[in-house]
Every structure is written in C-alpha cells, then in structure tokens.
Image (cartoon, rainbow, N blue to C red; front, side, top):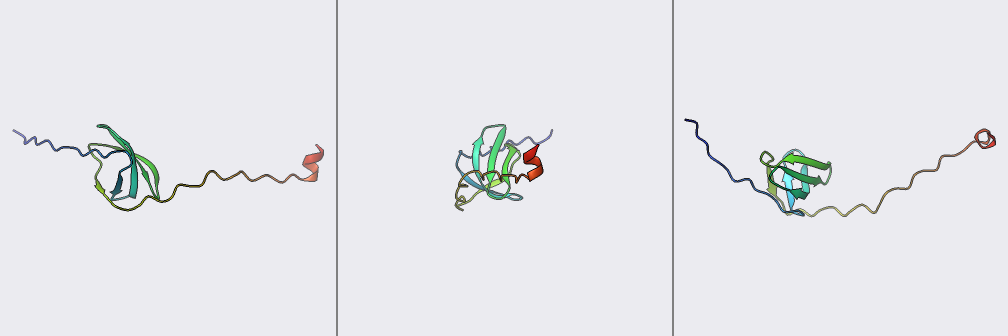
Length: 84
C-alpha cells in the first residue's frame, strides 16, 4: 500500500510579504485553497497553484507604489498632414 501522508498547505494572508525561489520577493494579493496570487517586486503579478507553490516569509519592505500612469506622448503633425 502506498504511503499517503497529507501535508498541511500554508495559506498566506493578503498583504503578507513572501519570497519565491525564481521570482524573488513579493506581496500576496489573495490566496485560497486553489490559487495564490502574488505581486512580485520585479516580475509583476503571478498566479500559482496553492498546493504546489513553495514560498517563505520575508521581512523585506515592499517598494513604494508607482506615482501613476505616464501621460501619452503627443505625436507631432507635419504641415502636409494638417492641410489634409
């Protein structure tokens, strides 16, 4: 008979700072028994399967939030385009 040992899956609370082996430090956005969504400092938003993701707690601070969206550059019009 195969040995079936259940391991408790650790769910992190929203806002918890965690570290991932490939993506580095990030902030847990939401987590449930199926998915864990993390906003990584340098790699953006990623979704993982909660039972399979390997994370560890970290005490690093989150980077300051971005100040907002950049304004779109205005395209210069040439005299021929303006006359048409």
